[in-house]
Image 1 (cartoon, helix red, strand yellow):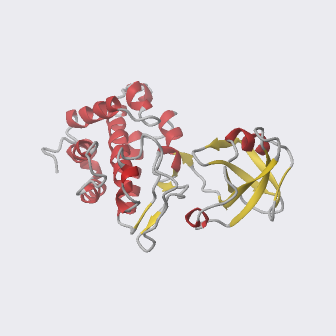
Image 2 (tube, helix red, strand yellow):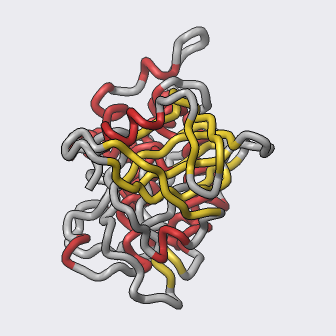
Image 3 (cartoon, one colour):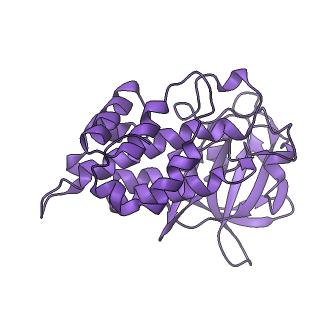
Amino acid sequence: MLSAIDIIHTLHKERLRIDSIGAVDICTSSIIAGGNSVVARCRIRGTDGDFLLKCLYTPYATTMQCRHALCVTYLSIHSSLTGAYQKSCCILRKWDDGIPLDVALFYGSYDYRDLSRLFDRMAYERLQRDEAHGDISPDNIVVCDDRMQLIDNDGEWCAYNEQGTNIEYGTPGFAHTHRTMSPPSKVVDDYPIALLSTLIAAMGHYAAEAQEGEEPLTKIPTQLLNGIVAPTQESIAIAKQKLLDKGDMPHYSIACAIGGVLQHIPELKEILEYITTHEEEVFSGPLSQPL
């Protein structure tokens, strides 16, 4: 198995050729190492538009990983461990334009209440489908103008393919504690959706307290903001208390469901439906009681 360092070193080369693709220019500032691959934004010489290049640590890809690929090919990587060249399986996809959710939250470039609304809309739409994304986390979500979009769906589970995939178990911190104990299913998205809906809604309430001329980002407790990268019981508790104080009972109901033994969160879809159809009331509160 190749290491992330070996792949990153190769992607930094000025002239890079990939089997069956040709000459590729890598945007080196976009290179990110993940649990099973290194990804980067790139351009193929002679082709319009940007692409996402995903270089796996292994020379093979699963059927699910290839499902949304435009091309699956190989890149020769020099292994610092063995001194020999090894093949990295490369998956090429169209680049999804937008700003990663974690970047949007950390740098205060958006209204936090708007981000909460956009996330809940996206989450509600996702829960209506027959498939699960499998790896919902802030760096797998991009903000595109007036919508959010999930990317990097290698861990996708489909109702018509109940085998799904067992290779990935989601991003640590955003996957349910007992996820590895059960086969993949549609409910694996419940926990990360509930978690992020809770955290972002609380951020929205904190940011709304900023006075004229104040930077909204400074109103959000550091522990809560850091929870977007590494959720803790403390960050969840801070968010939960803020939702209760503000009378945001729909989001508070979701927050109360986090930490249960089961992956499935009953009525999550129904609560999100209520939130998306009563957005102004949810943030102007208080609403008198949990749903």
